[in-house]
Image 1 (cartoon, rainbow over the protein chains, first blue to last red):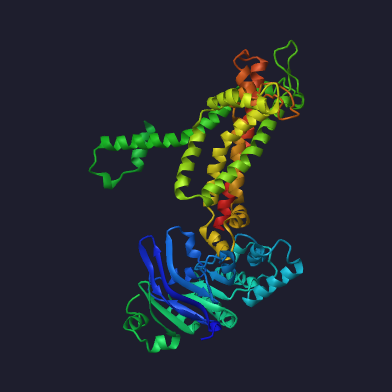
Image 2 (cartoon, rainbow over the protein chains, first blue to last red; image 1 turned 90 degrees about the vertical axis):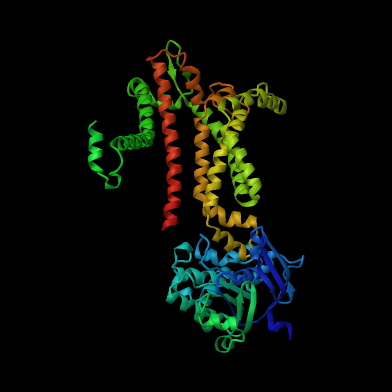
Length: 257
Length: 314
């Protein structure tokens, strides 16, 4: 396969929290420009796997990993990898919307301010970037008159859209989403799913979800995990209609999980 | 007696039917005692204010020229024509407070950031114990340190004839206020939701960038409250500054000048003042002034902290 086909490839990835092994020999290839859903019962390691891709799980001291994760052809565990650069390329959206307690405008620009020299971008360029990012997530119409108000005062749905928007000025290649709709109501969920649909052509999206129908609606590929192992990985349709493994079938049918 | 019967009638508790009346009475006594302990704080604050005010009031409302009191540096309470100008003392308190805060705020906030964000849990425990011990050192011991250690050190380092001055007192007060600033500041930083740190980290921010781009804006009210409480500590301190400032009533022009503070004046002169005469009462007026300053500082700190909570709930 050409290297562009896959955005994320893991080889024999193991992860321990202290003595507990949360991921066991994970080897998966995640297709570029496509939505991949990580599904499985609670505690199966899907969030742990997701949090490996931008190495944010390392903020807790007791995490140990072995194996390899290459993102866009580069092993993220190489010595010369800059975490800051990695996280610029691999953006993340969290379970609970977590806009920073600063203005909407500054939230969108936060990443840029971290990654570019002071004053490298002038005011009109900044305004344009903010408008583009907010338009891309269908938030511009709602907030264009209150860009300076605090982001934490928005509704949860708007906050989550903002959390996606603030990734975009950094031009990420991969967007990781950790149950991005679990704090939202039905309407908010639908809005975010629509948004994911419009973003998937430009970005590789990996989404962790507990919601089977959400996985079915949004993703093209599915990875089913159980007890830290990948049980099955394939086209979402295949997984849902003709699962190859007994465990997958039982989970999909809702017999456990 | 009346209240006890009243309370008993109010709470005929069927669940306790089996217990003896003696037991019930004992429980009630303990409950009232605990309640009294709780309310006593309010009682004491008002009581103290009342007594200080009562001693100072005759002078405050009769005889004391308030304009002169605040604008004259002439403090001469025992001459034949006594004059009570506290400008020099105010300047002494202000200079020592400002310089001590200039030292304590960066040190205290820096320590708070380190304890809350950068150090390992083990070091954190050790540091917190050390900081608590720093807070527990009696002020007279700080006075010793000012007198015996800082004094010669300042003479040696600056060539000043005497090492008891604004600088000396400020260093001592800074060390005394740092524990307050660290513990309140650390609480403020700890109260910032972890999701903010994670959000900034996931956008590629370094730990230091998280501190100044996210934590400082998010915790600014709590940090301000920490600083105000430190100021309150510095203004009110008496014994250590009495020993460290050199006690010369003047407006200082350099950190190496000797000064006298409001608190030290009361401590030094109250024993000599004749009870009930003007000098005695003026010292109590200074006490009222200190009370008001402390009240304003603490109240603003409190309102600021409350302000954060209110906003977080919104």
